[in-house]
Amino acid sequence: MGIRIISTGSYLPQTIESVQPPSSSMGTENGSLAELFSGAREHRTCSEHETTTYIGIQAARNALTKGNIDPQSIDAVLCYSEAEDNQIPKDVYGIINEIGCHGTMAWTIDTACASFLSHLNCANALSLTGRKRILIIDSMNWVNRAFAKDTRTDGPGSLVGDGAGAVVVESVPGRGSIIDAIEKTSTFDFDFITMSNAQVTGKRESISFTKKNKIIHRAFSILPETAQELLCRNGLTSHDVTWTITHQPGLNAMRKWHELLKIPVKKNLNTFEAYGNMSAANIPVTLDHFLCVEPKIKRGDIILSFTAGAGIHCATALIEY
Image (cartoon, rainbow, N blue to C red; front, top):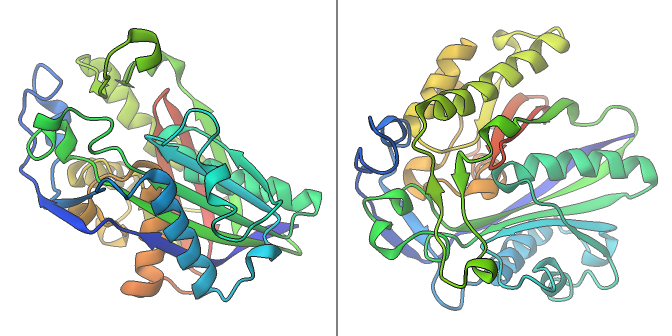
């Protein structure tokens, strides 16, 4: 058994802000991160009512409606939200009743920006246990909640955007859409991106980036290295890849990864210029965009997808849509 993607959905907040290129002083001595993270023109930011639960509900409803899917047919919901509305209970438990998935098994799985691919791999494994339809929801409300206010338009906060993506998969005989996947963690780069727990420190906390260029180099090289490992393991080359949908920290970072993999950058599908880095929501929102808004992806296309989350956790997947 395997899984096949049968529907996608997304939600983007109504507020649009123009952003400036981040300054070279945003986190490293020589501006390496600022250079890699450039390219966004604007991003979406959540208003007060657009909580992580709310935008997750909207993205999930969008996916269920577009696929004409009965919420009661969903056997499991996998979710990640940043920065979440509640520590306890998790946001997913506020989402499932609102979308009509009453009594459905629901898990929060957190590998930060890598969460969507971790969800996809988990869904693939759950299909072997008899779960027939699984809903994946990744919801991000971090521009205001995880970054200092004065960095929203020309500092680290200008790099990111709020939004939510959802995907419904169903079990099918045979391999399904997931050709193969690799997940690994490089604990040497634990402090590449950090945010302390306000419950521990007693003050409002914000995300910060490392100032160590050695960590920056290693953190950005692990992704193409793992992607190349996955291609080789399956006897494929860059020529076999129809599209790439990757993590979206910046246009230059994505160009660099494609140069290292010898994949033409024109094969990369992304929404970074308009939406910024939406962390775990990058890949599902981009899937939805290039399936429904600007249709490019077709059945049978081979998609190489890779992303990294704080830790650093690296996830890579070969997907036959």
